[in-house]
Image (cartoon, rainbow, N blue to C red):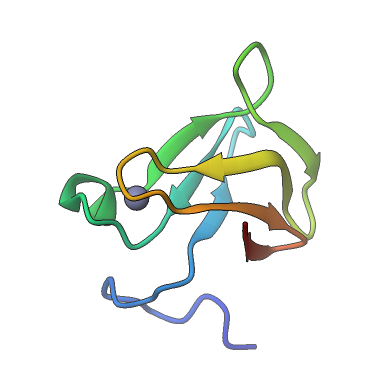
Length: 84
Ligand SMILES: [Zn+2]
């Protein structure tokens, strides 16, 4: 198991983490915009405009996730980032 290794921002693979209360998830990725690079994006689950939590373990979210700052785009399925 190498996932969850400490990262100082050089990890190029985006990663999603489910919040404790399940109302949102945190998305972290290397970004050209330093504001997004250091603070994980907090994205809503459910409701209009929110993402769908398809599965908690391993974490699967739909639809795809897109960063408007750097263009990073992909799916997070079964605990893994899949670039589009
Ligand atoms: Zn970005």
